[in-house]
Length: 170
Image (tube, rainbow, N blue to C red):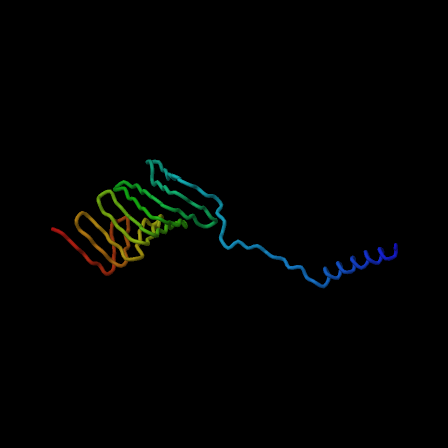
């Protein structure tokens, strides 16, 4: 009886060894398709201050900071300068220095009454230029302008547009 148990354990050992030798183990690597944010903010306010006071304020409901960019939901961005205050609202935004990319219901509002509505725009912080990339509607008082794209240089106050349609009231 002792010999049979010895052969049994030898058989089990050889069988398990052959399974490990002949069958290659399959390693399953888990890959994350979406990049993980480094920092996440909910219901936030971000102030940019300089020696003369508040330069800009950014608020939103969710901000996710990644290595090279930051995404913002329900963004409200105030820009202050000596001449006027400007506000940009967008459902989605992406900050990739020095650009802010806006999408989904973008509103550009100045304190002098100018209001611009579009679905996609971008702002260059260094050059102080606001570019509208899709058709837009611009309202100033009772006057309404619409076009395919718009370039607004905020430093000199000049706007350039393509395919303009104007409704002007006297």
